[in-house]
Length: 364
Image 1 (cartoon, rainbow, N blue to C red):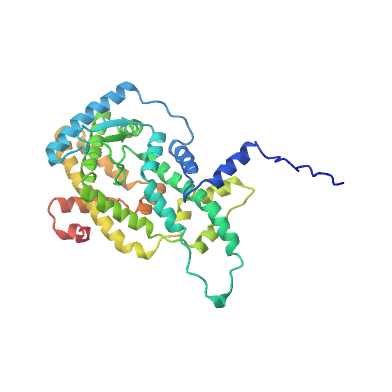
Image 2 (cartoon, rainbow, N blue to C red):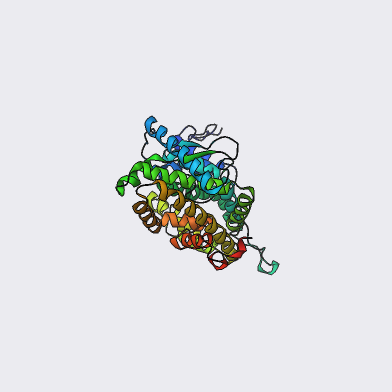
């Protein structure tokens, strides 16, 4: 008569939180584990700290400023600022909410990236024989790929959330809506850091957001930009050797080493950038330069007339552009949207009538 083993007929780990979490981590469907992405995005955006609600009076004041901004943008451009026939509305959010909404909005781009990174290499020649590690690494990749891409997606959006004033810090089209996100905490912190009137900064932000919205809502602009962004992120290819080199630094007994490697954006970007994206990038940069040049032209037209501290404010914003951190630069390179001051200057010259050399004709 056999004696049953200690675990026979039962799962001793069932119900333990850590194993429930692991099960969810590795059984999520799709190329990106969105549950992981959301958790990492919120944590990165807030440093793991709870955020307070936006004060009602601050929200009302921002809505009033936005109504002024919308009228001014319409007058300066002649463009419809809304897509639904209703006035543009302002949604005041914290950094965590901004990150979650943006993660959904960027979902198609991030999934295109994930699909590109899951592309397999060319099949081995029969004379080379079977790859003894293919099955093991293939299964490991299927398990780890969505988790790692979820982490990277979360870090990507979380880094953006830390500095975002509104939803168009990067000129990426959003789902069709006339509700624009604004982050009062970031606006007020910037105003305090530079000793600027908060209402002046808020007016600049709302003019910028509404001008971006007016341009990116044009069907032909939206379609072209979405196509170029998709083509760029889809052009990435995995480099297993480079990624394997990064993994050598992981010590399974040290959680900090895992975070250091998987939490480093360069783990992803450094392993996959390809020369094939150069042509797409040139067209994307040219189009974005024109968009940003137009928005800056609108800001100059409206801001000089309405914002008392416009000179000091624009200088502070120029420095902010230059002083972007590594996380911000990673996000920009990931989407092909490296918005240095040279890009803004190039667009401004073109919009001011500086000739075809100011912006590439390949935007057509």
